[in-house]
Every structure is written in structure tokens, then in C-alpha cells.
Length: 325
Image (cartoon, rainbow, N blue to C red; front, side):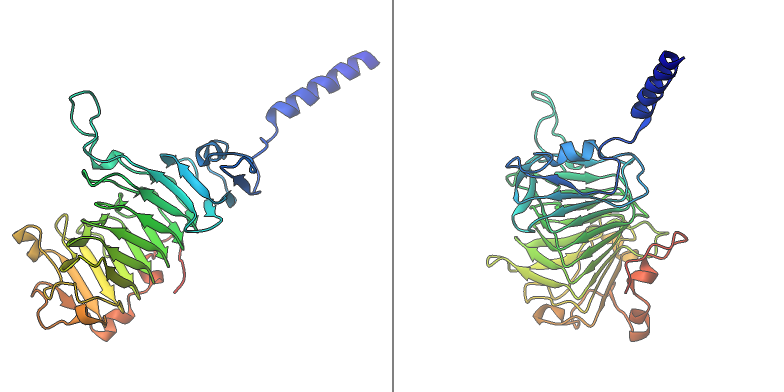
């Protein structure tokens, strides 16, 4: 009888062990360090151990270092925070660009495969780190590619040239708080609703900052609030944006605009888009903020209209997600 009881208990123990949560299936922080002092040496390894559809907040803490990785946070991951030890010294970098041949003698990989970091999951936070595409200027080269909803970026740097940030899915909501974003052409582009609060926007060549492709039925596209735009010394003319598709929406309000911003402010990309583009400004300052020569198809908000543009109202949905005002 004792032998049978022992066997049953042993079997039960094995079953419990098999069904127990994995070592990393908990809210604790995972540490990544290139020097081997963390649990993992790469961010990709840490992502792999995260449980699907977590209902708690999990932090992947990344120590200072250069992490040469091409990463995807897949759609089945949520509630994950990638937090760097130091914004400028915790760097995720890759170097794909659109004209890299996919096969010998074949066509290039195209814009949308060039990302350094692609976020497919919802409720993801990036904090205190740099995401970089350091490809040579040989074509479009995306640093950050987003597809998830309710994404938060705090005190991050996004470095690249053409097409640095691609906000890739209509209806998704992104909030950038005190981030640094640099690029050359259309370096913030796509159809998502994205709010940029107190961000630093650095223009590296004469070109366009934004290329929104906001759908017609989407009320908001890109909102820049209390942001500062600066330019490299060689830059002499920049446009605030051009519409990648009809109905592109971009608003700059309470922003500091340098003298290099073209007097007309905006470009139509294609003439017919003047009829649909939603290009707005409100109480910007600086030498590039003068409104007397702005294109006739852009518009200055009234104080009443501007008062209604808040993160809470821009992001309003039945799910109740809000980053606050």
C-alpha cells in the first residue's frame, strides 16, 4: 500500500511539474546584458520566454550596450515593457534598407521589411532606449515599425534617415512622450493615430517631416504638441508634411518651428490631395511659424477647436485606454 501511495504521489508530482508555470511566467523583471551579467545576452532571447497574452505587466530591463538585433514583438505578446538602463547608451540597431536584394540579382526587400524593431502586439511600452536603423543612405530604412494598439514610448530615441518611424496600421493608437526622432525624408509616416508630446524632431536634409496616410473615416492622424523642430546645419528648407494618401491628417500645435520650415509649410505630394489633406496648426512659435504665406488648403485651428484636441479625446474608445492629459 505504501509503495502504491508513493507511486501515486510521484506521478502527481510529475504532473504538477509539467503543468507548472515556466520560470519566466510571472510579473518579475527579466534582465538583459551584453556582458553576461543578466539572465540573457540578447533582447530576442528575453522576448522568446515571455508568455502569450499576459494579463500582467512584465519588464524586460536592458542594460547599457549595443544590441545588434532585428526584433519582432509578435501579436500574441502584450503588457510588455522594454526598459533601457540609459537612453543614449542602450541601443538596438540594425542596417537593412529597401534596396538590399532579396535574392541574387532580384528585387530589393522593400520598405516594410527593413525595420529594426517591429511591434505587432498591443499594450507595449518602450522606455529609456534607442532604436536605430544605421543603414547607409541607399533607400528607405525603417527603425520602428508599429502594428499594435495602445503603444507607449517614453524618453526614447529613434534614429534613421528616410522612413525612420512607420506607424503601420490604421486605427491603432501611439503615444510618444519626450522622445527624440531624427530622419531625412517622410521620416514619420503611416495611417495610425499618434500623439507626440514634447518631442525633439531633428531634420537631417532638405525634405519632409511627415507623410501621413490617415484614412478618411479616422478623425485624427498625427498630433505634435509642444514639440521642438531643429535642423542640421546644411538644411535650408523643410516641409511640415505631405500627404502619402488622400485625407492625411497632421497637426502641429504649441510647437517651436525653425526658420528652415518653408513659408508655405506643407506640400501636396499630388495636386489632387489639396482637396482632402487635413493639415492644421495652432499657436506655434519660432521663425518657421509665420502663417501669412501658408498654403491655402491648410488651416489654423480656433482656440475653441484647439481646446478639444487632448490625448484623452484623440484616443477615446470604449476600451477606456488613455495616457492622460
